[in-house]
Length: 151
Image (cartoon, rainbow, N blue to C red):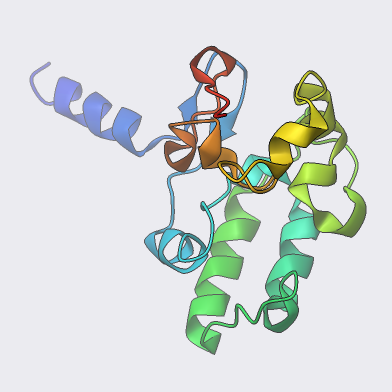
C-alpha cells in the first residue's frame, strides 16, 4: 500500500487535467509555451481542431502577418506534441474561418454578451488578448466566474 499511493499521485500529476466545463488539457510542452507565449498566450490545444493547428504550424513564416518561424527541430517537436494531444471538443466543432480561435462558433457563442466595442479598448486591444479579461488564461483557466472586463 505504501508504494501504491506515490504511484497513484505520480499518475494523477502526469494526467491531463479535467475541469468542470469538460475541457481536458494536455500537459504543456515547454517549447510550445516558450515559443508561442513570446507574442501571445500559449492557447489551449482544445481551442482548435488538429487540422487548424497543423495549418498554423505549417505557415509560421506568415502567422497572421508576423514571421513566427522556429527552427526545424522545434517545429517537429511541437507538431508531434500537437498531433498527440489535440482532440476535437464539442465546443470547437467545425474549423473556424482562417483557423482563428476568435472566429470559431464556440468563441462567438461564449462572447456574445460582450459589447464588440469592448474589444477595441486600449486595455484589451483585440478578442485574441484573452489575458485582458481572463486573469488565469496563461494557466488555461477561462472560468467565466473569474472574468474581469477592463475599462
